[in-house]
Image 1: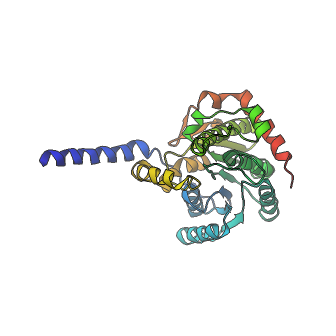
Image 2: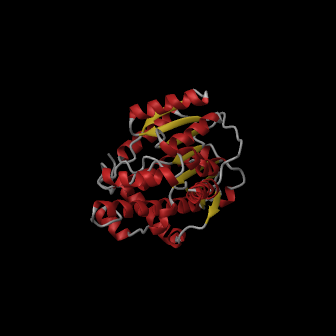
Length: 321
């Protein structure tokens, strides 16, 4: 029995060391006050986005929760106001799967909000299906919606500089690919296949788009007061797989509960990229565990980044209503 207990105790100790010394990664320790600053956080009614919005609100920022579901977002705004003691937390409706909604959000924001200091492109989905405009859902939401949102708000960001754009990518960008001819012809980055394989591949491809978008954005904004960063938040247990089949979620849940980070820990690299002083020369870089990291080879392809930008411009301009 003592041997069994020793093995169990050793396994528990190893697990705790793994979680707290490896998987938990770095933390944002910068104590900046954000009074008078305004931040947008997409997908902030739950998960990493909500944890990010809460931290920014605690620092005194005016925080706009840019979310699709009104009831959930208003409940999240209430929670954040209560927990932070900051009443400057508001909901504005944004469906990244609808370019019409993205344009309406930007128009409303620019008419009603005089400042924009931080744009946190956090929202993300994994699943099959298509957006309102016929794009693959992961490409349309994770990349194209955020691309249009950012470009529509760039002028305000520049007016309020120094300002930052932070885009949540993922380590899985290393498995991604961008096939521009396929994207032009099919409005997606993956050929039709089984729903499970499609969901994984399209997610990886969209996360590579996030990295390439940030790289090209940095090139275009060089010399302005706007810097931008992409990041891997860590292995985080969130609702990103809510579009997956029930049996897939059941399989994933025990593993996620044991080994994945909670939302507060998962928000740390986002907050680091948004708040840490002195990283301005690293604009365009990719971060993980609150440190700059090397991206995959495709994520360093400036030519591909430029092609994706130009194609994204054409795709968004082709949908005007």
